[in-house]
Amino acid sequence: MPDQVKRLSVIFILVISALVIVRYLLIPPTFGKLGHYRARALEDAKALPVKYAGREACLECHDDVGDALGKSYHRGLSCEVCHGPGAKHVKSEGDVELVVPGKRKDCLRCHQFLSSRPTGFPQVDPLQHNPVKPCITCHDPHEPGPPRAPADCSGCHTTIAKIKGVSRHVSLKCETCHTTKAQHKLDPRKFRASIPAEREFCGKCHAKKAKGSSDIPQVDIRLHGGRYLCWECHNPHNPQGE
Amino acid sequence: MKKEKNTIKRREFLRKLAEGASAAGLLWLLPEGIAYGVFVSEHAGENAEHYYGMGIYVDRCIGCGKCVNACKNENNVPREPFFFRTWVERYVIFEDGEVKVDSPAGGAEGFPPLDSEKTNKPVIKSFFVPKLCNHCDNPPCVQVCPVGATFKSPEGVVLVDADYCIGCRYCIQACPYGARYLNPQTKTADKCTFCYHRLARGFLPACVEICPTRARVFADLKKRSNPLQRLMRLAEVHTLKPDLNTEPKVYYANLDGEVR
Image 1: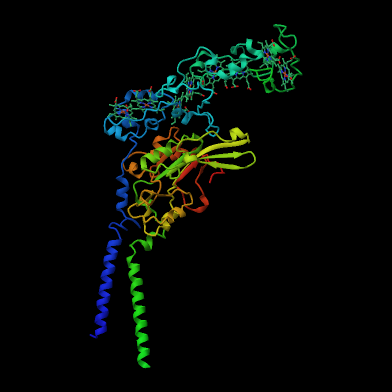
Image 2 (image 1 turned 90 degrees about the horizontal axis):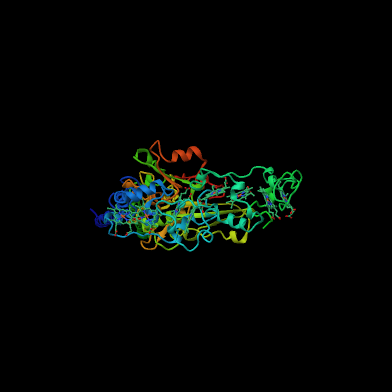
């Protein structure tokens, strides 16, 4: 064998074994088993710790809270949306304390009025709705809803009652214009109050020749205001205008 | 004269030989799978037990941002307000056709009232859109990874192998949805995993678990009855940027055309 071939083959063997070693070092085991990746990475990803234990886990020890919550408006909420990740709390059987969110801002996170929120979602204006007091002085976070049926319409329809209180219609009771079942105060959405439907309703007091006090200003309801409903021009709760 | 010619030839021959050998060696250095794995779309779902997807009812989202928070807690996403695996955007569509999108801190702390509630510019509508990795069936991020550190799992979940990622950011650039970021702690690419570790234990992803209005639903597409059924039946379903052919597996119901 010529010398140069010998030398060349030595070099070749060296290079090839170097490549073998480099390849061995560079390509992790399990690479390519399932696809163009390290199959072991799936196991690594699965092994990460869980922080949110889920509502079922909480119910094992707090079934009283779970029962209450399950029947309330908050039934769709996970415990941990308010109390934070609870896996450690569960594991330590209560030793690791959880957040107990009692501030107004904790509730307002979901209930502050934002025009971008879907219509129908219960929202409050924090400046109008019982300012300063923490929400949980009136609402049970696990059983939210109206705390008790307020005796008066103004307990809930505060703004309307306030406006009407300083208007020309101050002497009229809400029930004069709205018929309400008693249950409206307990479940307002299911038992709706009525709203006057046509202009003749206002005519009972305001039409020419209507019976009643002569102080009541009268108009010819056939002509006055054209075919519009009266409350398209007059706010019924504040008839003399803003 | 003759001799010189010969030397040149031999040198050239040796050089060519070395070149050829190293090229072959380099090719062989590449892990197997490259030939079929990267460029041919894998249909990993075909023999997997599960195949996951998510549905989002846009009209249920109240923008509380609790999902963003839960995601950060569950997955150790840095608290800084520019790293997210999931985030919530607020769309505001004005009467004059202008569309504004904001997402302060990704929505992690909720949203303040609209500015326009002060300026009185008339708004036609406004709504929230939760976003996250779409776990594309045809993921562009996976195609660009030079080392095979990001991939589609047999369940259709696009994952990052943090031990193997070299932090080159190609995938971050390649993602048309901005769903990836470079984790400053690990210096590797990071993204939504559908909470792969939770799925493995039979839990829902943290954002789905926490959503108070069931705006997010999670489904195993292999199951005939899954929560996406109703979404597909009742609403017009959209995916984001469908024209890119990425085939997202996050499905939006009642999504406004302005959202991209």
